[in-house]
Length: 457
Image (cartoon, rainbow, N blue to C red; front, side, top):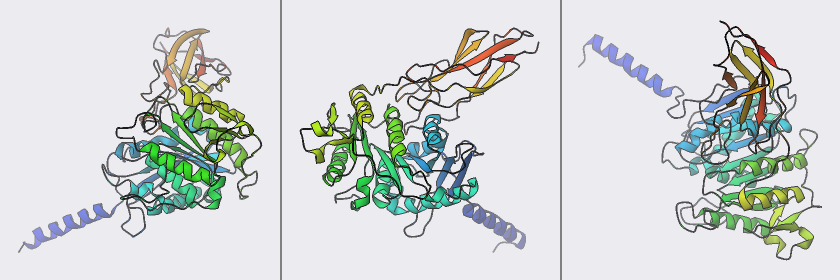
């Protein structure tokens, strides 16, 4: 038996341990993420042991375009399975390129990060029927309260998902078709047929037939490369596409000729594609039903082909053809499936709010909707001074200012828009300008006014 003093200390230790275990605890690698100061907001839910609820903790981070009075929708950027991909979701809402899409349509940009342990069962979150559907809808309510946008739980969704995120986004189309404006499924689709050790298949509700859905994958995921870790992606996509199109669904397939499971350059097709869908489907009055996609300029193409034609000129079975909303999207599709080099002839927006403090420059910039943001050119006294970054990076596609992780999200720490002029002559005034450069090399106009720096001696 312990002496009274030892017993008391032991009790205190046990109580403290119990309290620590009961407090919300984020474990590595899910405990490091950017701050969520306005216009960013975040909620987190602990793992639940209740039947039917989400068994993993989850963060939801949302970006609200500054100045927007009433949101018209929410764009969801959903990561894939595995600890690395789940961790990458922590920065999804901070992606400048996806923010440009959200800003254009007065939409919020939301990125979940499910705290799936290494090698744990991904189906426990990527199948929305296992609690992630309910958690997502709860997050919209709570984030609406935190951000002052009570309309957030009611607005339509545009869904993007990678791998397990594609399963999740496709599942949400089939569960809530009346809420989904469009969905892009990269390297993953929900099950429509029963299979051993696979989730219960979904049924296809009539409402889902009106939702534009792009099934996007790498050609090395079973299209041209028939073996390897990801060879089963194409058979799943093929089944989903065949079943949906047979019922007249607005379903598309686009095979990236350069990649396997990594996202590659898909954002340069995905973002303009979602842009076109949102322009047609979002109602002008918040709360009204989604608009139907127009059918007067539809183009069709053979699955895994490279040529699209107007629907009236398509010679094959229309109900097994890739559906493309219009001529512009057909042109982009043909460029993408050839070499992913979707064209862009418009320069990016000019940077704004250039400030010079001594020899430190800071500025702000929106990404180019079509081609994103590769970097900036700094000019001093009318002459080239530097590139920021000196060398843009991205191991999975075009070099980009924020760099990208495997699930198409910015790396940490987030890259700031700043530059230090280490070659400025002390005591001498200099005039600076900043020019944005998109990922196809087009340059913006310079910052509206040259900023003058007067470095200290």
